[in-house]
Length: 88
Image 1 (cartoon, rainbow, N blue to C red):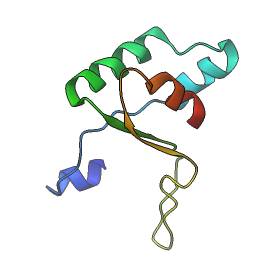
Image 2: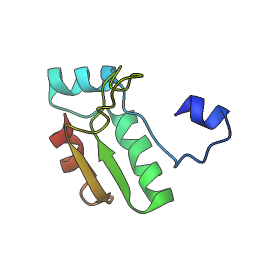
Image 3: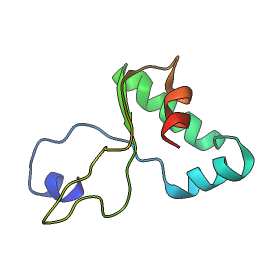
Image 4: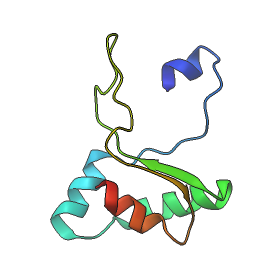
């Protein structure tokens, strides 16, 4: 996405939840407070969002696997935690 933005291509707004946040969730069962705040602020700005799984290196010159694991559309402030936990 950064390369596309650098080239001036239109890119939708996005927010990345890091692997570190996932590890914290996996070990404690809790989504870090800072992550909750950032996601809720992002949703407040955009009203509905898509939450999708991702992994490093899912796209290459020969293949693209973006979002093949799980994608949730029209996610709101009322259902984002459930959607995030399903992709975790």
